[in-house]
Amino acid sequence: MRLTLERDRREQAERLLADLKAIEQWNAAYWRNSDPYVYETSAFLARESRRSEITLQIAVVARSLDPFCRCLLEREECVPIARVKDTSWTKR
Image (cartoon, rainbow, N blue to C red):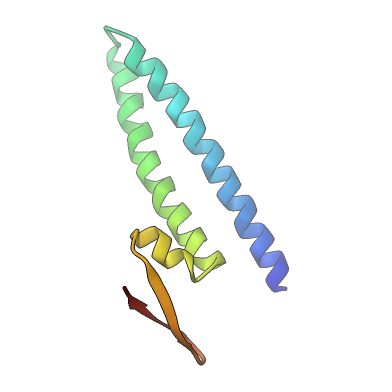
């Protein structure tokens, strides 16, 4: 059961990363255009909003896959100090 959940989460992360890559390609095309139409600017703003949502979703998925990802997401170095029922963390 746990392996299936992990596989589903990994597939979800891969889909989200593919969406991010597509957004980056569309945004690059938008920035190359010196005089974008209003609808292109609206689409750009919508993509930026979706990009923020995807980034948050990736953070949630990463945290659920591996508790050690919490340190990576916070961009700080952490060391597990004890493993009981929950993992306790301390920052260096």
